[in-house]
Image 1 (cartoon, helix red, strand yellow):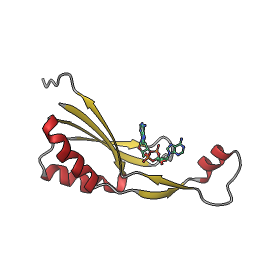
Image 2: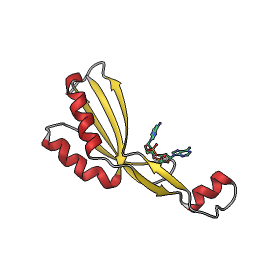
Image 3: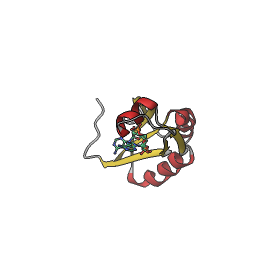
Length: 108
Ligand code: 2BA
Protein backbone atom coordinates (compact mmCIF):
# COMPACT_ATOMS: atom_id res chain seq x y z
CA UNK A 1 0.00 0.00 0.00
CA UNK A 2 1.01 3.60 -0.54
CA UNK A 3 0.18 6.89 1.12
CA UNK A 4 -0.38 9.52 -1.53
CA UNK A 5 -0.06 13.13 -0.37
CA UNK A 6 -1.23 15.48 -3.11
CA UNK A 7 -0.99 19.25 -2.75
CA UNK A 8 -3.22 20.96 -5.28
CA UNK A 9 -4.44 24.49 -5.90
CA UNK A 10 -7.50 25.61 -3.98
CA UNK A 11 -9.49 26.26 -7.18
CA UNK A 12 -9.24 22.57 -8.12
CA UNK A 13 -10.18 21.01 -4.78
CA UNK A 14 -13.92 20.55 -5.41
CA UNK A 15 -13.62 18.99 -8.87
CA UNK A 16 -10.85 16.68 -7.69
CA UNK A 17 -12.88 15.61 -4.62
CA UNK A 18 -15.88 14.88 -6.87
CA UNK A 19 -13.80 12.78 -9.27
CA UNK A 20 -12.22 10.83 -6.41
CA UNK A 21 -15.65 10.08 -4.91
CA UNK A 22 -16.95 8.95 -8.30
CA UNK A 23 -14.01 6.56 -8.61
CA UNK A 24 -14.70 5.34 -5.03
CA UNK A 25 -11.39 6.48 -3.53
CA UNK A 26 -11.42 7.22 0.20
CA UNK A 27 -9.59 10.41 1.09
CA UNK A 28 -8.98 13.06 3.71
CA UNK A 29 -8.78 16.66 2.57
CA UNK A 30 -6.87 19.27 4.54
CA UNK A 31 -6.97 23.04 4.08
CA UNK A 32 -3.29 24.00 3.83
CA UNK A 33 -1.18 27.03 2.97
CA UNK A 34 1.82 27.18 0.64
CA UNK A 35 4.90 28.43 2.46
CA UNK A 36 6.14 30.56 -0.44
CA UNK A 37 3.08 32.34 -1.86
CA UNK A 38 1.16 32.07 1.43
CA UNK A 39 -1.97 31.18 -0.58
CA UNK A 40 -4.48 28.63 0.59
CA UNK A 41 -4.10 25.28 -1.14
CA UNK A 42 -5.56 21.81 -0.51
CA UNK A 43 -3.80 18.63 0.55
CA UNK A 44 -5.37 15.24 -0.11
CA UNK A 45 -4.29 12.15 1.83
CA UNK A 46 -5.14 8.78 0.31
CA UNK A 47 -4.08 5.27 1.32
CA UNK A 48 -4.33 3.05 -1.76
CA UNK A 49 -3.36 -0.40 -2.95
CA UNK A 50 -0.33 -0.45 -5.24
CA UNK A 51 -2.50 -1.52 -8.18
CA UNK A 52 -4.75 1.57 -7.71
CA UNK A 53 -1.86 4.03 -7.85
CA UNK A 54 -1.79 4.63 -11.62
CA UNK A 55 -5.55 5.25 -11.75
CA UNK A 56 -5.30 7.67 -8.84
CA UNK A 57 -2.43 9.62 -10.41
CA UNK A 58 -4.38 9.89 -13.67
CA UNK A 59 -7.37 11.34 -11.81
CA UNK A 60 -5.19 13.86 -9.94
CA UNK A 61 -3.47 14.85 -13.17
CA UNK A 62 -6.76 15.26 -15.04
CA UNK A 63 -8.31 17.48 -12.35
CA UNK A 64 -5.44 19.78 -11.43
CA UNK A 65 -4.21 22.65 -13.53
CA UNK A 66 -0.89 24.49 -13.77
CA UNK A 67 -1.39 28.25 -13.39
CA UNK A 68 0.68 31.43 -13.36
CA UNK A 69 0.56 33.49 -10.17
CA UNK A 70 2.24 36.76 -9.32
CA UNK A 71 4.37 37.21 -6.24
CA UNK A 72 2.80 39.47 -3.63
CA UNK A 73 4.94 42.67 -3.39
CA UNK A 74 5.90 41.92 0.23
CA UNK A 75 7.30 38.49 -0.71
CA UNK A 76 9.01 39.82 -3.84
CA UNK A 77 10.68 42.70 -2.01
CA UNK A 78 11.98 40.36 0.71
CA UNK A 79 13.45 38.02 -1.89
CA UNK A 80 15.04 40.73 -3.97
CA UNK A 81 15.92 43.09 -1.11
CA UNK A 82 14.17 45.87 -3.06
CA UNK A 83 10.74 46.59 -4.52
CA UNK A 84 10.55 44.97 -8.01
CA UNK A 85 9.56 47.24 -10.90
CA UNK A 86 7.68 44.43 -12.72
CA UNK A 87 5.36 41.79 -11.25
CA UNK A 88 7.23 38.51 -10.79
CA UNK A 89 5.56 35.49 -12.33
CA UNK A 90 5.56 32.13 -10.59
CA UNK A 91 4.41 28.90 -12.23
CA UNK A 92 2.41 26.84 -9.74
CA UNK A 93 2.12 23.18 -10.71
CA UNK A 94 -1.31 21.58 -10.83
CA UNK A 95 -0.27 19.04 -8.22
CA UNK A 96 2.76 18.26 -6.09
CA UNK A 97 2.49 14.59 -5.17
CA UNK A 98 4.44 12.57 -2.62
CA UNK A 99 4.11 8.76 -2.65
CA UNK A 100 5.17 7.00 0.53
CA UNK A 101 5.13 3.28 1.37
CA UNK A 102 2.73 2.31 4.17
CA UNK A 103 4.11 -0.24 6.61
CA UNK A 104 0.76 -0.92 8.22
CA UNK A 105 -2.71 0.60 8.26
CA UNK A 106 -4.82 0.13 11.37
CA UNK A 107 -8.35 1.32 12.10
CA UNK A 108 -9.80 0.95 15.60
P1 2BA B 1 4.00 27.51 -2.30
O1 2BA B 1 5.04 27.20 -1.26
O2 2BA B 1 3.14 28.70 -2.03
O3 2BA B 1 4.77 27.69 -3.69
C1 2BA B 1 4.08 28.15 -4.83
C2 2BA B 1 5.01 28.17 -6.02
O4 2BA B 1 6.06 29.12 -5.77
C3 2BA B 1 5.73 26.84 -6.26
O5 2BA B 1 4.91 26.03 -7.07
C4 2BA B 1 7.00 27.30 -6.99
O6 2BA B 1 6.74 27.54 -8.36
C5 2BA B 1 7.28 28.64 -6.36
N1 2BA B 1 8.25 28.55 -5.28
C6 2BA B 1 8.12 27.93 -4.09
N2 2BA B 1 9.22 28.09 -3.32
C7 2BA B 1 10.07 28.84 -4.05
C8 2BA B 1 11.38 29.40 -3.83
N3 2BA B 1 12.03 29.20 -2.68
N4 2BA B 1 11.94 30.15 -4.82
C9 2BA B 1 11.29 30.39 -5.97
N5 2BA B 1 10.05 29.92 -6.24
C10 2BA B 1 9.45 29.16 -5.31
P2 2BA B 1 4.94 24.45 -6.85
O7 2BA B 1 6.34 23.95 -6.84
O8 2BA B 1 4.02 23.90 -7.88
O9 2BA B 1 4.36 24.21 -5.40
C11 2BA B 1 2.95 24.37 -5.12
C12 2BA B 1 2.72 24.16 -3.65
O10 2BA B 1 3.04 22.80 -3.33
C13 2BA B 1 3.61 24.99 -2.73
O11 2BA B 1 3.04 26.27 -2.50
C14 2BA B 1 3.66 24.14 -1.46
O12 2BA B 1 2.47 24.32 -0.71
C15 2BA B 1 3.65 22.73 -2.04
N6 2BA B 1 5.00 22.19 -2.22
C16 2BA B 1 5.75 22.24 -3.33
N7 2BA B 1 6.93 21.63 -3.15
C17 2BA B 1 6.92 21.17 -1.88
C18 2BA B 1 7.87 20.46 -1.09
N8 2BA B 1 9.09 20.07 -1.57
N9 2BA B 1 7.54 20.14 0.20
C19 2BA B 1 6.34 20.52 0.70
N10 2BA B 1 5.38 21.20 -0.01
C20 2BA B 1 5.69 21.52 -1.28
